[in-house]
Length: 199
Ligand code: ATP
Image 1 (cartoon, rainbow, N blue to C red):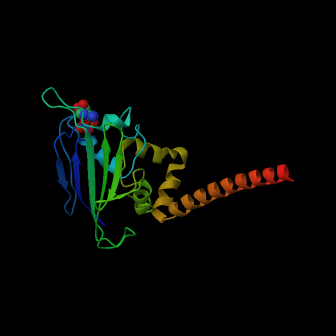
Image 2 (cartoon, rainbow, N blue to C red; image 1 turned 90 degrees about the horizontal axis):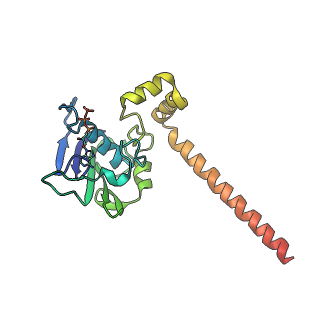
Image 3 (cartoon, protein in one colour; image 1 turned 30 degrees about the horizontal axis):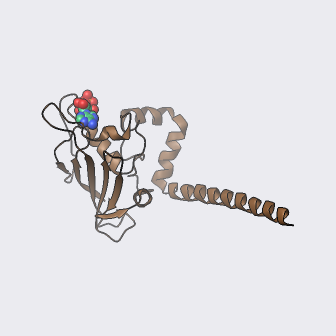
């Protein structure tokens, strides 16, 4: 699977639309301090569903919307799209080209799209689960993550292997099933209480 294109508009320092095409081989982004290199990575994390403002180096989610400059007014919408070539069918979808899009409006409304069709965040996370591409997976490695992996903080090394070996999705499903079971047990207890009261 090949990452083919990143489109950013109204996200952090990118007031105008910027398109980055990824060809085969290595793509390097260079520039002076503060020019927005890390914002490109933040945009990738964000479009893949990142919910943690800390991970996006921002205090509030609204702050990721382009805030304007002396000569430019602030944007009302942040929009990022990330495209993949899926001809090898690594992503579990029939599409050979996959584009995920995330939008956030200043009034707080937000939207996810998969090949331009509105979807849920869950559809995006499920699509990338166990591919190594999710917002918190090993495809995006920051300096602080290298530290965490070396020191094995919070079993980060284990999580890395679990994602690579494809068992994360089963762990997640197990967690979701246990949570449903717990809810069902609570409902059953409630029914028993009601029955006791009626009798
Ligand atoms: P370094 O090499 O120092 O790590 P960098 O090239 O990675 O820098 P970033 O951290 O990506 O730079 O970008 C920082 C810039 O992004 C700052 O100038 C900051 O003002 C700008 N920025 C962040 N959020 C916004 C926003 N919402 N609107 C406008 N500009 C923003």
